[in-house]
Image: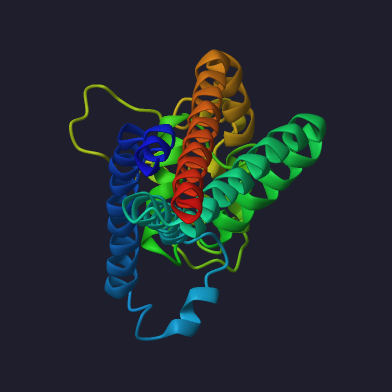
Length: 271
């Protein structure tokens, strides 16, 4: 009699070990990202002075590693241990947590589409805040330089946005050698140069607008980002749909495993 019950209700080994294997990768990757974040903060002396985390006026890119790594670590731990130990609490936590992330992504996408102008204003404000803090953090500086080089842009809506930075503004009382200039990442690339000229942006904004475009990219990063989205809409949509389907698939598998475990336990209880 009991044998018939076990044949009718068995935990799927395929689902169990698929969830385990998939999530152990997430778990390890999450630990690696958190480790990189802690190492970066240690190198910058943040761990010895915790209050300095909030001192930076712009975005510290290390936060991206810490937040993404922590989320991946928690999800990976719940899914990995939950599947291996057949722990329904951890598996349900995994499903709910993944469902919340999916809902937040969906909500963010809808709001971004409905409030496009507001999002553009917030993006402009975000970039300008980071321009102000450009020299305050080396990681932020590298992120801004990468963005401006990749999208061939300068500032949020133009090179004059660099007036917001105390080192680059054109005020008479500015003693900086970079006065009325822009970072080297704004400069147009010369294929003949093997070594980056980090002084190429010096005094460039003191020149007439007609001459500036010969030396720097005059388009802002916000319109360039919009253009990039339009040009790569299919790719971006494909990535979002793929991530969404992967999340839904993970939720369904976890719920299926929970149902199998509860069915087996119920059959054992009534045996």
